[in-house]
Length: 167
Image: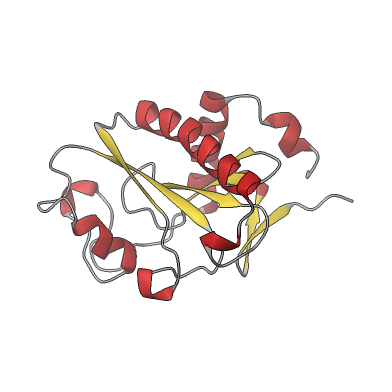
């Protein structure tokens, strides 16, 4: 019987929250997004550091990151994107599994543009205009996350067959 989840570090991610899958990576919606549309593209093989990925895994992660970024920018009416990998604890990595953050940006969403990195590390506060809790970003419901993943799957297209082998 196929698994109904994928591993992201110690977390079992329900396939309802996954919106793309390839040989070496998968995309998932974020439990506590910094901005609406903040998603992750994750290496399928669980390694903590970027330098542990093979060249094929690196290529796949970034090729699919580019594809996902186009969909996110369109669906969330973004002016730009912040894309980053926190590679190790000193860089703010909290889940020890290589993943690429894709965060839609809108002009003026942060007073200081680089403030987003403090928020990623958990040391900054999210501006009010993002409509996300300033104090402790509240986890979203499974229903909200599944709806966003479904919207992204429709926009990106072509992932149903890859996902169906896990369902």
